[in-house]
Image (cartoon, rainbow, N blue to C red; front, side, top):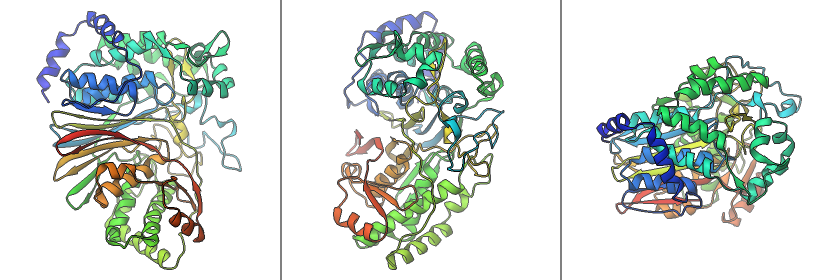
Length: 546
């Protein structure tokens, strides 16, 4: 991937480059991008990010360069879904021409002062005041910038200084405030108004920013320009920016300190994988959601699901495999560095056979497995997938958590913070309970599929807890059933979180949903996560999103 070019560019960049590149990007009209395909590759996942990433590819950059620039642009163009202060990112990359596959863990880390009982739930299991969701106690150390810098340093060919310019241009020039975001701010006006930084950013003359008004964030632009001049995000974690962030936490009785920021490290880790005939699925490991997807697929493999006769029993077996995986996810999983998590057992052939046997018995008896699981509403997030002409693939998910995250903003930096600590289970005895320096379980599932050792698909999704299920459905169709990609991504999807409630897209056959209801499932209509993918078919990379 021409590492030499990467080094030369960095040594040649000077501070004056910032102004030149920013002016260039500002003149190009970055908002409301059209999805494009070209011989250089493609990027998909968010309109502004797609345009930015495509231009990087067209200028000779690789998939990592493109997805880093795209992620930075998305972080300022879609501030409700992710952000420069978003809580975390998870990614998977096929680099060195697709020969090496590595995962990124840029999840948030809880501050050192966090304790297992920091969010004591009441008798209904709810945290009083929802302080784990909104406010300064809901946010840990933001991981996105560290993650982007790490993958760029490791696999990119361009500098951070260059790739952050589109984001700077967007924050400086601004864009018309969408009606949907105006409605979100109005609907939670008291939350936003009670925080000085958020009030300055999202209000005008004492009123929430109206649809169509120009939204600008000059304070964030100034911060990004300072990082660009240094060609590094170091100051965000161990410099003047970190000092400013920590001071705001202290002012608002938050827990993150200068020491917490300085200790943060994004990580490159080995992905989890599952082989199905000549194809291999590679996905991000815990604390990401990939283990749940692979566990459900391994159960299908143990029951020879693809050989079963189409019909209600096969559909029920597929659903029960997912329900079992969700039961284990919500009762057994957490940060494996801080809790005892049986991830090896859950992905073992023996456990898959045991699960397959339980499911076969339930299907034979016309029953469903009984689980007591607490459902929670998780939304938000952006997913980007990218491919380049060098044979590299990238899948990267970034998130605030739910809309606008913790709904607090660092005054003076224009930095709205994600609420990653809401992804902990508030019960102190749970393996995913809060704790000092712990990373919470999250739903991001960036995934790459290889065929005969060659990468053919990069995918991921947005939509909170619905992401793992949507990925399971896509992979079941594309890998297990061997469907063409267009058919696989269009196939109807089911959502479950392990209890007896099943949500089906409208296109799922009514003949099956009515029969499942007779078996005791609570069946209702519902939506799915939105998947963004790039796939190689007939020698051409094609983007798709549904």
